[in-house]
Image (cartoon, rainbow, N blue to C red; front, side, top):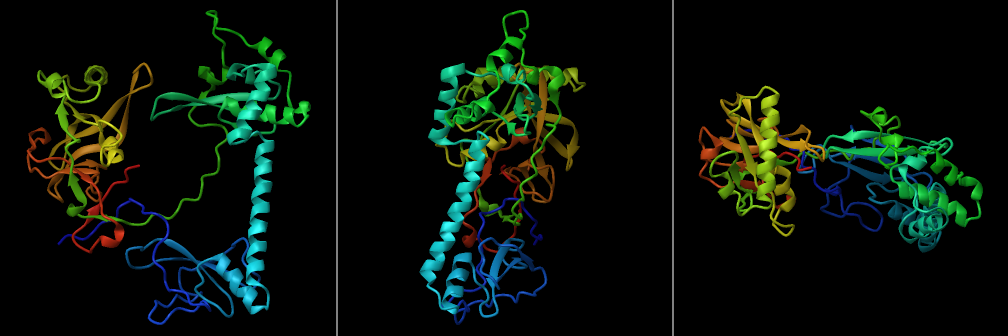
Length: 428
């Protein structure tokens, strides 16, 4: 029996409840007693709205199916193991002779006031939503017409820059207001100006027509947007938002029983005499063949052998296909690497870069043989990671496989057992 290995497929937040609460907040008879606040691994954190004299303790599950997951419990001198701020407020009110219903109403009102203040602040920066944004944009365009990036870059104090998005090969532009506020979309800037115009605050709107007069063209009648000019394309934006605090990953393990055969996931060798016929029932066969020829040409130009193999994993035919997200995650063209992995050939996912296909981009998905588990897999090139898809044919060449490809489709977590397991790569 092989030991289980960690997998980055993070389940939904939530998880194991240390104890069921009674009216007093104490665990019910037979319930699991909550850990004491001073237990190892627990730390006190700030929690908005928590009554005076209460503590919020952040802990991490040390065992069980939720091992590694973070949870928070609230406690006071009288109560422990409380799962929510609202319950803590209710208990505190009852303990101090106040009306619990009124205490909760006051808490809800304070939360709403804070949310409204935050929303008003965002709106003043033009970060509107829904109908308000539409109205502000229309108000601006009714006077100035549609705004464009070339004009924004000529507004006093405004600037733009862009970066190449490697995954899709597109140029993404950003614009910076004199205040430092970042706008990713032109209609956000229109909404910003329109909002203040609707408030009668025209001093927030610069001279749009003067900026338009400064815009140059490329000699063919097309406006030059300096934010997208080659000298403005950067590896990273000059201002990067602070990364959001990630939810702590929870280890998930995969069993062979978690995989289901999929008739929609097929492997088709490319650049062969029979490739066109094999692609006949797949979406956009002509586009796939053209992409394969272009990829092969660029690989050869980069020093790969002229006989480099290309394989095609078929994507989902339509959005109603079961497990469509996982199929599309492993679908696409793969090229054979010059070396071997686990003693057998392996292939890496590749695609054309940019709208004109002038370059190549590779992902972290590989088709490789797992000697540890004795099957072919698609996913991370790591024996400690299970595949997003597997094929249980023990053959030297994956193109000779006579077993179907199987997709990772685990059952609900509560139905899982502690049988033989392996890692599953993250579909994202």
